[in-house]
Image (cartoon, rainbow, N blue to C red; front, top):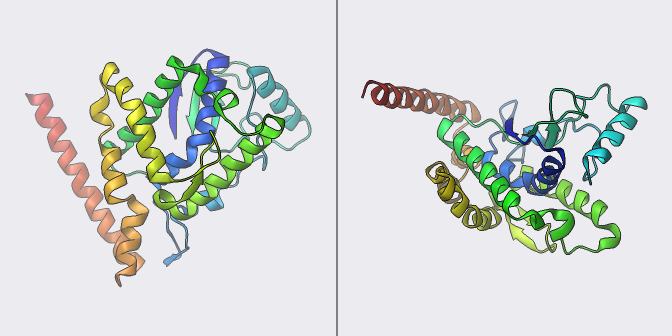
Length: 264
């Protein structure tokens, strides 16, 4: 999970709304669970398709007070066992949820073994949030052109459908954009956001951490690479064994680089 500290409750809820709509993009970048019991499942993220989302329906919270009231109702009726029993793509978190909140928790990502790629996902998320802080009108409640009559429900349905599509096809998924409902490839949407947030990352001094995002878009995510090998006659066991060796090599190289920089 990726946690980003945001202490102001209404700012946090605005961030939750935006990232809820764009969480499928982070799944598309990180998808790495295409197998179960040695067989390809047909999904790039089998983990997310089997994730026990609870409650089954989570609204787009309009305010902190909305989140408090909704949580209290779900706990009181037994839909949630406790205040932590909210398992969804992104959620507000804090030391006394739902009352005292201090961070956004992105939960949708699959496991990412490469620390450099992990940093890239964090950098993309952080840069997007800085853009939102600078331009609050990015809030889907304001920016979306979907019909105002059923906008909240339509946005939730759109986000949920995009999650399923991203779990299935990751970067090649056909998604619906929350601003106007247009169809867009996940990788193209990520590229659009990358270009929008790059100036913020440069200004704040962490643009170097963003660059691996371009590599994932260009070369594919872990699930896509594994499935290419699997479809080229390698069995899943061989694919995973090769990935383990690659992970060990990456860790050794990173350790050497870090130790050298510390000595220097």
